[in-house]
Amino acid sequence: MSAATFMNNPNYVEYVRLLRQLHRLIAEGNDGDEGDALRDDMDAPWYALSEEEIARIRGLSADLYTLDDAPAAPTHQKSAAAKALGAEIQRAWEARDWEGVLDLLRRSPGVWPPHSEAFLRGWSWNQLGDPDTADLFFQRAAELAPHDTKPSVAVVVAQSRAGHVEEADRYAQAILAPAA
Image 1 (cartoon, rainbow, N blue to C red):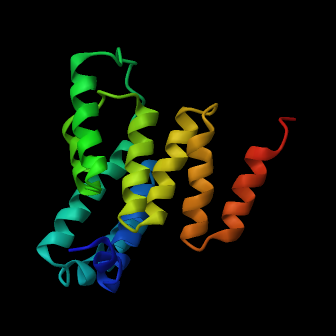
Image 2: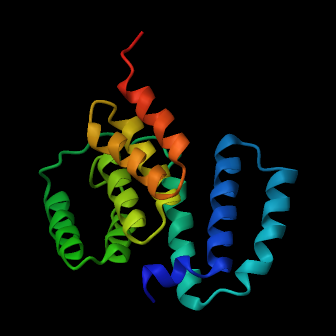
């Protein structure tokens, strides 16, 4: 199923929107009645999803938990594991296999620096047609690597692509404003 097909299914889009909200509540430690109400709202779209959509959503849920994980201690990026993962990701990237990139990151957490993993997740979700989800990962990458401009620019692009032009403009203004 193509990325566009997923995003053309209103049940998929609604479930993903609710899932992002639920993960935000969980991260804020505010998963009480509002979380229960969201879970109830998630039932109807869930039962209208295909097996392929459910698999993608399960992967997304796992990815969303990485947004709130404390950054792992830095590892030596020249390690054999990092090189092997890099080669596998490069092959998936060249094949435009964004699901494959995400799967590799899920199977090998902590091999690369957290900001790099977040950026790759954002890029992959953006390529899969979900700029709202991509925005979350680009923002995490920008937070973890504040001196790297690539994630901040990606935030603006993802927000614009998602139709959040005013939000993108505010973000751009904030990163361009001189430090007070």
